[in-house]
Amino acid sequence: MASPTPHQPWTDPQAVPLIRFEGVSKRFGDFVAVEKVDLSIFRGEFFSLLGASGCGKTTLLRMLAGFETPSNGKIFIDGVEMTGIPPYERPVNMMFQSYALFPHMTVAQNVGFGLKQDGLPKARIADKVKAVLDLVQMGKFATRKPHQLSGGQRQRVALARCLAKEPKVLLLDEPLAALDKKLREQTQLELVNIQNRVGITFVMVTHDQGEAMTMSSRIGVMNTGLIQQVGTPVDIYEYPGSRFVADFIGAANMFEGSVTVDSPDHVTTTCPELEHDLTIAHGDSVPVGSPVTVMVRPEKMAVSRDKPAEGLNWAKGVISDIAYLGDVSTYHVRLASGRKVQVLQTNLRHTDEQPLTWDDPVYLGWHPANALVLTR
Amino acid sequence: MILYSLLALAYAFLYLPIVVMVIFSFNASRLVTVWGGFSTKWYGELLHDEKVLDAAWLSLKVAMTSATMATVLGTLAAVVLVRFHRFAGRTLFSGLVTAPLVMPEVITGLALLLLFVAMEHSFGWPAGRSMTTLVIAHATFSLSFVTVVVRSRLAQMDLSLEEAAMDLGARPLTVFMSVTLPLIAPALLAGWLLAFTLSIDDVVISAFVSGPGATPLPIVIFSKVRLGVSPEINALATIVVALVGVAMAIAGRVALNREHARPA
Image (cartoon, rainbow over all chains, first blue to last red; front, side, top):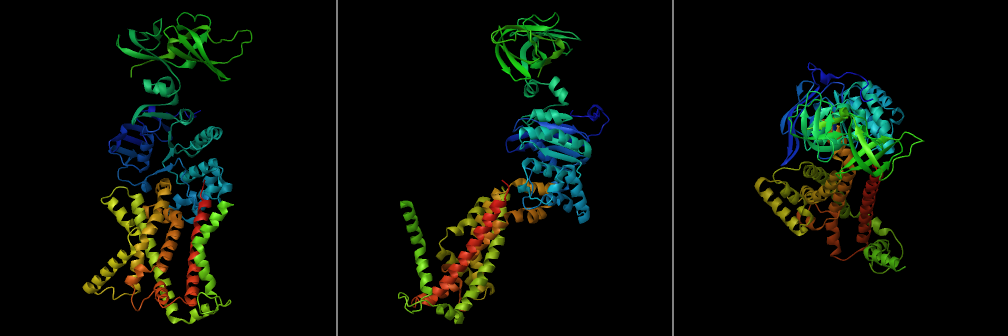
């Protein structure tokens, strides 16, 4: 859904990135907002910077736009070094979280503002404004003032205003944060569609992981000024590179332990919280005896009254809580060690079966391929 | 009921003197405290008093010029104080710009007079006490008021509006002219009207910096009153009150309209 094109320039070592951060840091006094970021973003990507507030993602975006100057390092856009180039000369446009529509101008004047600065003739501006307003389905509202529009309509005008300039890169600072949930989900896909149509590279800042997963070609997960991991939504979710990312994206059961067997096709670990050793079905060159974390996603586990088949990892426990959400239920299972584990189960209808309930003794089972060893 | 009585009392305390003055400006009798029937003759007589008319015209010119000067300078000061956070002497500048608000007018007037005299001695300008000295003096003290009004408006303004304009390719000067200025225009107008009213009714500072050839209206009224209050003065004062009232009503109306037009 996120990327209908199989085009993946980041896997091609020959590909030239459109945007490149080289060792970029930003300090405000003693506070380090962004630390030694190296990052490449390619033409046509929908790249998201994901992180909690204060992680430095907005600062990174503002450095790209030219509103902040890096304390160290360099930023290149389309091969041109951006140091010393003011915002009004950069080939990027930004969509602000507050939309920042000029309240004293009509929708058409807002959208035409950037084109007017470029010195385009009036007729040409009018044509372009009309085309871009039609693209975001706001053609009928050209003569309105921003305060006469709803939140969703303002968001479209703000987007149109950026698109009108046909920038090389469009920066979006929490573009959907001000919309209500339903409109937000609808707009997510629409934004991706528009991006596919205009072919402009989008860089978005968001704290909403669902939003980042839905819309992005790749995600950069940030924490305390550092980029923790860069990858496709699938990479980030299925193969998190660190405990932080595993915990930040989605839910995760993590077991501390140490490696007992390290062979090319599997790793065995022993975890004090579990009765049995765990097998993880991919070779990870981890020295025997070293401390690791084994991560299993809740939906990758199965909960049942029967003992799982041979070859699966398993654990025994008692159901301590059930969160019924209609389509799925989350079971909280307490193991003998007192450790609680989350399991997500789709609620298929088994009419003849007695449903699991509180205090039922159950087995948890998961395939060795569905666990991951984390060393960081 | 008690609340309404209190309110009435408060209004009476504030406005009764003015109402009495307005009523007596329509008094046919020359005696100020004796009602002799309704008449507008004092307004007619005012129109033939060259001295009063000259003074009124001068006051109007001084008020318009000094209010404009104060608005330009006060706005610049406000922009510097709000938009430039770090520069050497910012705190000192902030204090000095707003100091005239609390400075006793007698001292401001005296200081300005001494300055003008010294300047005339050393390079011959400004020659004597004239409209020029009045304008400079009034602009000096009213620019602090403009700064305060414009500053609060600027501080409320969403910074991302200016950033958005710059992001869309506008250079700093264009950003100021096409985005900042239209958005703070109500504050500029309010500041201008405030400076205008401050100038048109100023007595103390004007007393120091006005001269024989350039006497503004309040000084003329003041000197006439010393010879005894005449109904003519009442008429004049009524006109001034009406003028100031209209100006303040416009300022209030503009601010109100703008407030409604702003996005929620």
